[in-house]
Image (cartoon, rainbow, N blue to C red):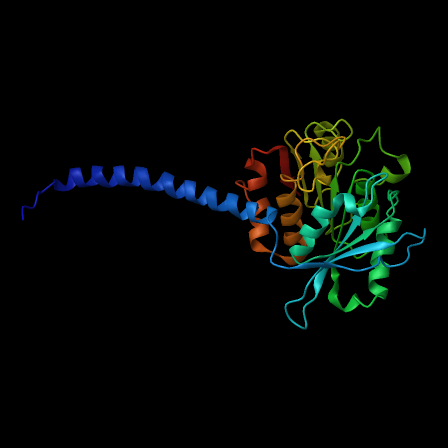
Length: 303
């Protein structure tokens, strides 16, 4: 067999050429892995989901509360709790795809049937009803989030900042702009956010009620030292969060469906409530996926 001597200089050139191919490939693979880590939170989680036969009865205004429940995999398992706020005139079934999805990722979701949730009282009542129910042993009261849509977003915030709420994080989806929001509901947003509480604002790029510019105003007022993040879904309108997962027939204010919202709602909650490292990576570092996702615009995260 013939052996060719290429010499040290040629060897160096060959190594540099090889690295020139390998390193970009590794970088691409890393970016792809990060993308998949976010994408996974848009897929159904590892838990089967059940609902209760009849809503818990009743909150202070006589409304029932729906429960979306992950099925336990071991006898001593307990779950974080998410309390949900509906938008004006909406009921939990409008958000059923989202609420079941969150439960599939190991969260008990309590969803009031109240469609006027801006004060936050209905979301706190839902938590209290859960605590008094036979499902209470499954709930981890140390890990609670409040999230909501439109008027329900203001309700989620007001529930979070209520005295002794125990709520550590909140997600405000399509919160109406300051000039459109009920003054009573929005007076404390976001300046009332307490130390160690965190907040995520999500909206649609094409939402006339909750435009990216309107959300920028709220975001800029979050008190220093609080973890805050924001993003708008490209092309989305006010009611895309109601997708099942796509927009339903004749759905007003729905353009793209829920798809691009899901990974970020889910990953934020998994990070903040469960310390999920893969979920944290979606929001952490200069290369955080939320900052690079082409389906989002105006994304930012800081303290």
